[in-house]
Image (cartoon, rainbow, N blue to C red):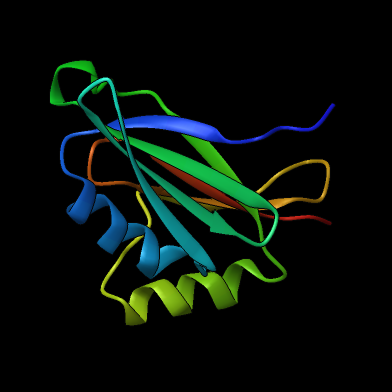
Length: 115
């Protein structure tokens, strides 16, 4: 069994896409409508996110983690995009390095450099 996607409720698809285009490399996008709800699948290397436009369902607490080769390089890349970490970077006792960013709807995006 393999994970197909991670779904998140967002208030505004365009705002969320603009944010995710800054923080991860997007290879393709697919828009769908299902039961009068706008859906957008964002695909990248090794992940797929489903953004569901529904302001009534947006909840804080969603968490997504991406593996990167270098935390420092990712932080520099995102600083160039005008984004600052909401937490970290941290060194974890198992050798990982991690840093957190907040998405436009309060979701938490974590980048992890494996030790």
